[in-house]
Length: 222
Image (cartoon, rainbow, N blue to C red; front, side, top):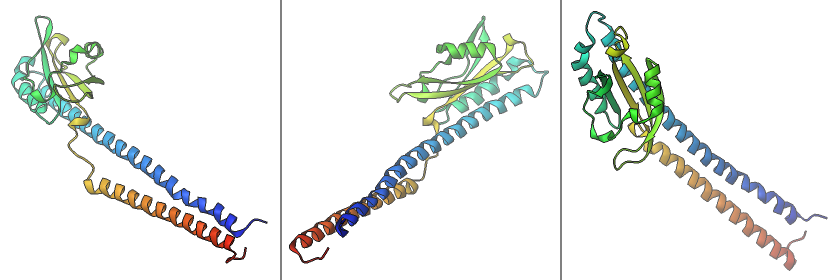
């Protein structure tokens, strides 16, 4: 006949369920944090796209104006974008059949040249606007994936008389972060749960040992 102790000995393993939940919870929060970071990056990229599109809308507003007349405002606008934290931006214009950079680069994301990437050069030559991700590492900074967006403007000018504006952001461009109290509370909660579960396991093991010892001594009837 199965003893009471043996029955309790089987039930004690149910205490492992909270530990399994704890591990799953940790995996979930890690994945959730990554998804939040991806959402923040997506929002930052959308912001860069909107700025470039807004600049294009301003350039396109006057179809009677020569494309070269936009250069001063365009250069100032693109250089402003490039000075945003960890954001790349550059403006090009055709000179002697080649595209020449007309904006000064901010050191923070230098050196970077989008035309060093064949896939970008091919896409820019074939489309009026587009996006892609390229990998690079600025000086003394970690490697990252740069999400690029480009657009030719003004579209009312022939292809040889247009500016090319390029902007790019990476995970390091995101200045918004998850509040410290959220992540701290998560890990404190998980640590407390782990400590409580370990304590319960040790307590059950101790009680089982005491029960078995007393049973052998004959002080407990089975």
